[in-house]
Length: 452
Image 1 (cartoon, rainbow, N blue to C red):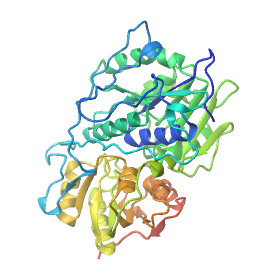
Image 2 (image 1 turned 90 degrees about the vertical axis):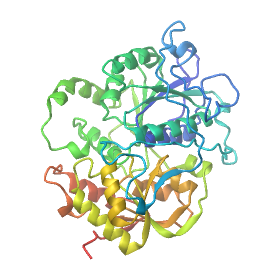
Image 3 (image 1 turned 180 degrees about the horizontal axis):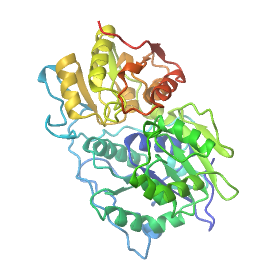
Image 4 (image 1 turned 180 degrees about the vertical axis):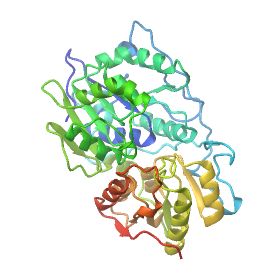
């Protein structure tokens, strides 16, 4: 789906809504493929780093009124300390980025993303020089989790470096925040020609979809959830995250059901609406009328690397314990055995992993716990990265082989043993996780590790 001109002769106006760093990364990949550019005046992109103001609203005609831009609370300026990630020495007995007594990890000092020269393939124009024009504004619906916010700030810097406009919304900053956010976006939503979203399961996004009149809707990858979204849309089912499927709907689910049903109808292609799914995941059940576009991480490979490769192995963490799918003790045992069997020295933590779990992993496995400040695809591409990357079933077993194509890095995935699952895990959990592993391309499959 290529950019199309707006109905009143203006360039096609695109709003992208993201709630996680990976979603923003995939918006950048989608925009790179389709040749979108900044809606503002021509000229260099805003610089990253300290002293740069955080845009809180759309400008000009997109502000939703005669100069009545709805400002949001700007995140603080970023310190300038270098370094791609926060590393916890194993002997320290704690994970940098959180107190052992706190419920969530604190991001700590956060480095700015170093500026890099843009390296576009030959024949590809700079984003701001696309013929015909198609403008993009990224709206960050900021979560409250400190690690996610930190990564989102870095990704927002990269988006600005690419020439796109970013609007940061403190969408969860209190009881009245959703009303202010939705009210401030309503005018822009009604004028948008295209809506791009990273999480069609998000109640926030589903609510915003009830306002827009856009004819083009695009869903970019939000990890393995994309596979489930496409399958549910094809079967006409209600939109439910895979790890919650099989449980009884709660009171909030029932209250929100009309909005969710409306979102599903809007995400179903019709004569008046086109739907695109931009994904690196295997999509087997494609709904009638949905366009599926492959994400091969061309922007990531053009922008970063190639990485320096070390001789050791790195292990990628997962939030399956935090989502209630895998038992914490069994997970720790599996990590310990996997690291020992393959000589892993570093553990790249998922942004949702709890500080308590990471403290325990550091103390009991001897691994360095790394809190990445960017999505792992970018961290790996920037390097240094291990010659072998070990992972449990997750999105990265699909994305890392694409981002690291041609580097010689080996990605290996370890199956989840059914005995690791909790009593409260969804009945679909084992089958879904096996499908994530079984459909991955260019990875080595490892048997579930057993006690030494």
